[in-house]
Amino acid sequence: MEFNVKSGSPEKQRSACIVVGVFEPRRLSPAAEQLDTVSDGYISNLLRRGDLEGKAGQMLLLHNVPNILSERVLLVGCGKERELDERQYKQIISKTIANLNETGSMEAICFLSELHVKGRDTYWKVRQAVEAAHSSLYTFNQLKTKKEEPRRPLRKLVFNVPTRRELNLGERAINHGLAVSKGVHLCRDAGNMPPNICNPVWLAEQAENVAENYDNLRVERVEREQMAELGMNAYLAVSEGSANPPVMTLMHYQGASDDKAPIVLVGKGLTFDSGGISIKPSEAMDEMKYDMGGAAGVLGTMQALAELQLPINVIGVLAGCENMPDGKAYRPGDVLTTMSGQTVEVLNTDAEGRLVLCDALTYVERFNPESVVDLATLTGACVIALGAHASAVLSSHNPLAHELINAGEQSSDRAWRLPLWDEYQDMLDSPFADMTNLGGRPAGTITAACFLSRFTKKYQWAHMDIAGTAWQGGKNKGSTGRPVPLLTQFLLSRAGAEAGE
Image (cartoon, rainbow, N blue to C red; front, side, top):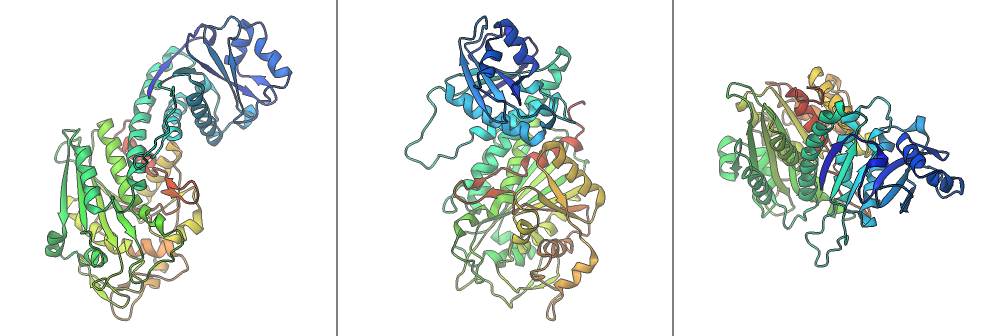
């Protein structure tokens, strides 16, 4: 879809549809008031008859409004003016886009971007509208034989900004929003792909496809033989029960000089997690195709980064693997020697993500990174703690944790910090090895991060548990594309390429 910004009066706009807001109870927004004046009270008369109350999400499509140049006027209920917050604004935009897509309006001019959202500026409102528009129109129908498409889908959307001085801000917001949306789309497509197609090799191929379009992005693979030579025995152990070989994919983005230390993003890429010998219950096991949500998030973020062409160096790591039960599969009771030399007693083969990540986190030491962020659908305990609304952040480096939390607030892809205190480390004690791979039921998200922290002593590091946010289950199951918006905002901030700069 094409997006633009302009600054003008609503009554002077000639379009297939013009979109304005109505507050509760039947209060016209400034743009709607201007249309009402030009139409000699046509809109306010309709409201007095009870056609629209103004409750959040209500829609009323009008045709041939007197003295209005646009073919249609879409009135959008925005709730009570003082209560219009970020969440409601995004919901209103999403519902508006979905509605426009069904009206036959192939283009529209939207004045909702002028609504007052507490604490948010034009840049935020336009960028969030672009991202919400793409999200609401997303479909995954690649594998369906009959594809239902709108007959006249929305193709162009123009956001109006209050003054001409804000046009540059709006254009920047569109560019950033489009880049994030492209990354989210790729992340969702990868996450939704079934595991008989999406395996570690397929993940590597997707990264290579992205790199073909950008001169400063290159991809390399680390495969089973090289992993064995490097002593990545924990990573390899997890893959032993699978017919699909492990592949760790490295995406090297160079936007700065060689001497600039890279930021490294490491994503858990379990393309299917059966639990291995500690097999999972069969109910909803199909959703374990989403256990590569961390790798999908890295893939999508690298796509967004390449679109933005930020002046930083970033390495994205997709730690691809599959965990299956088999005669060769690793067992509870095994003791593994990791790439770092530390030993791990396996108590549960379903705590496999940390075994893949620990070797990947040791591997990236060679890049002398500025900072490392790993992201993983790691623990069910995170879903219990935070539900589906916030990703967890755990870190031994306060400034990095704060950066990620702030990026979540700026992007509306929120995260919440959990403690990483030394007292939790004792829960990983083993009588037979340096540590176990399981700390028990209490504080499961924290002890998983404690495990990973033992492999990250040589750089600034943060862990993101996205088990509750990477996908939604149930009837409308599907990848959410998170945390691509958060991580892209984190990189935008690191590059000094935010809205006002």
